[in-house]
Amino acid sequence: MSLLQWKPEYSVGIESMDDEHRDMIDLINTTYEKLEKNSDTQQIENCLGEILSTISAHFALEERMMRRSRYGEYQAHKDDHEKLLDQIRDLMDGFFDDPATGGKRLEERLSSWFAAHFSSFDARLHGQLKH
Image 1 (cartoon, rainbow, N blue to C red):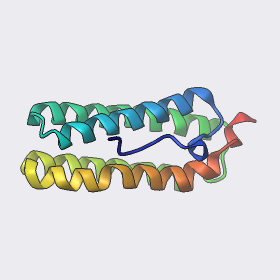
Image 2 (cartoon, rainbow, N blue to C red; image 1 turned 180 degrees about the vertical axis):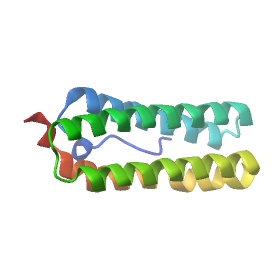
Image 3 (cartoon, helix red, strand yellow; image 1 turned 180 degrees about the horizontal axis):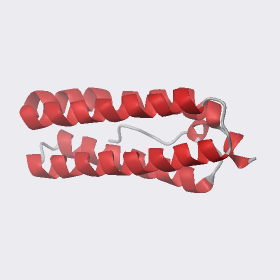
């Protein structure tokens, strides 16, 4: 079972960015499946590292595009990116310190932060970068 599903309202209207969003959903779902199957800790750690690096690169691209277009909510959006990255690092640290408890926390939080950012910041960004 997947943790996250792509929704049309997640679209920002730029195909390459939307593709990256779909890739992030896939990474989160893969990690969730590994957690559900009680996969080897190293496999889960590898997935978490991939999530962090993929999301970091995506956020950098998104921020560059927002700066280029002089997007009015750039700073608030960037601040939310930093908050999300900090949360991911905290989740990773929790998993590294205690895989059993950290794994449960990961399952609870992986989708919530992603969906919240999409439904707020990215929803407002929708279509703005196409101009």
